[in-house]
Image (cartoon, rainbow, N blue to C red):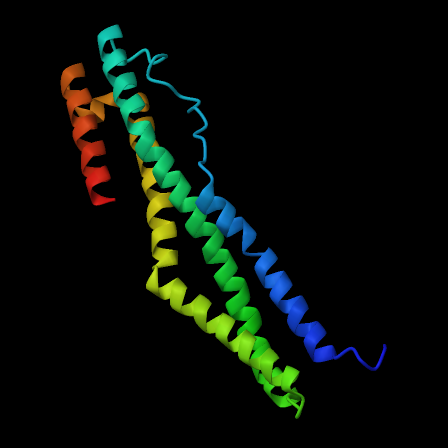
Length: 182
């Protein structure tokens, strides 16, 4: 290797490049809008409800789609950031003690240690401050809970009440309560 190339500077630029490139999915998830895949189980095909009941349920689902898209977008963004932060916190945390032992009088070696320490600290603070893991779980579970309630209504409508109107009303109330909790 030529004498004018400093290995510490190469290492630092490679580290910053990989850390930046691996953050792109987080930025991409925050910027894009995820599309909902239509559920394979629709109210329109249910044998348990009258045509009027099916219309009410489908209209309710149409109004709820904005919320489901929001939850899905947030879950994806927080999920990517969660995995990014876990990976880099582990990698940085393990490497820092060894890098500290390898420090020389070369200013680049000190910058490597400083940049990696700062990167890990910023990620850790962001992870805790923005409650990334909790929000990831919350949005993912909220979306899943809605589809569980929907499946339950389609598979076992009797669990929601004795009459169709009672079943639909209880379903709407349960979904509204779940949205409120989210």
